[in-house]
Image (cartoon, rainbow, N blue to C red; front, side, top):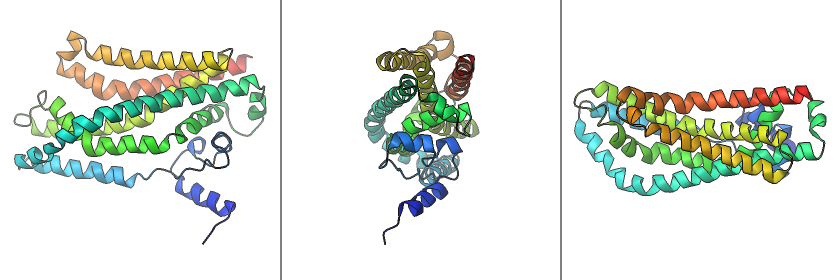
Length: 275
């Protein structure tokens, strides 16, 4: 049975109720950039949670029956083929989010429509984050695909990376904790890094003189962040220390996007209020 637009919007609002208002696809700013045909079904979190639970159960049982973990690691062959391709897809997603967020913000400044948005009941942060959410919604299906690949295929690679540092024969509980943390951090990065690169795009779009400059500057700064993060991990003092690797792999990739997103929003807030 066909449903009208109002009923569809109501269903979408209920489905995205777990999201903050600025991130919902029914947010007027998000809907404006998505267009009339841009409604996207909110991502289903249950399959990701089930995947995490299954791997957690397998690694827990593996504490007592090591052979189970070895059997599941047969996925390693599929992982080394799929995960690099998925990383390229993720890089393209970040590129698209950066370009779209910068484009959306720069258009507001170029067309002198930003003050109209400020006249709405939404706060400046909601306006800025709405631009980011619109850019992310356009690639929401791909972001979900990346998250699903992480849950299904990343654990064998993560196990190969971290089991030599925390051997299951010596520290089985710590190995389990590290594996679960590695999966959780990988999933959180898929959410936090697009938000960070999007807020950077909004900030640059706010001050850039034209669209091409805004997009180029955002992409260049985003690439510098990724390069700096990976080069720091390769420093001898970091690569040779289990404690520093834990910080670089489990704390920095979560704390830094949150910190930078907050800084970008505050600077954008200050720029707008100072004009």
